[in-house]
Image (cartoon, rainbow, N blue to C red; front, side, top):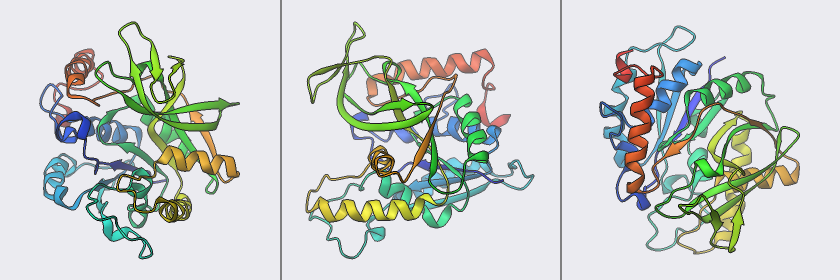
Length: 304
């Protein structure tokens, strides 16, 4: 069974202060997306789908040169597809607000990949490091996941995903008997030096060991009609708000409440890390260097 890795790479990375998707942070200039692809290939994924902005195409093709000549688990070449997240995929009934340039969120992003994904897929952010065990765990789950009405996610602990350098948005999850009971997209979460975590929007303390979604989802192809209906519902209520966006955790939560989706919560032995703010860079670079030194990754990622 072929499995696809779908990488959402069209985000602007505004809080980071630049294009963090292509920041060479590894010991030899590797970007976080390199590690995602490397880990997915060795976990058994045979196809990579990049969701990008049109102006990123040339740059992404240069970055994908590392995949030339590599074989998937079926012995054939690794398949690479590029799809665009732009306004051409917005339904005709919706009028784009004047001056809007930003995408419409991660539901829109994944929907843009509908024609490129015909197999079970793992959907990730381009600028997050999830750890090799997460891909192995997800690949195993996708091979046995029922076709319709089922999905999977890998969850992480809130305390390991926040930043001392500013607020973050996280999907706070409730798990019941191994399945996701709800996920609440929570903005303005602040980590303090003493380890305290606070939801600034609602002025409440948060449990550091709370389970959160970091957009590491496993879906079957049957998710795409669901995404389309959800996104059209969102657009009909969004009006002319120039910043409105629809996020995957919000869609998943709605589908769980409606009884349309059952989501298995998977555990991973690895640890997430990423760069929400430029000040996070040093810690991430150090963690990657340690993983190379420990033998988890070869000295030069794509020479192995």
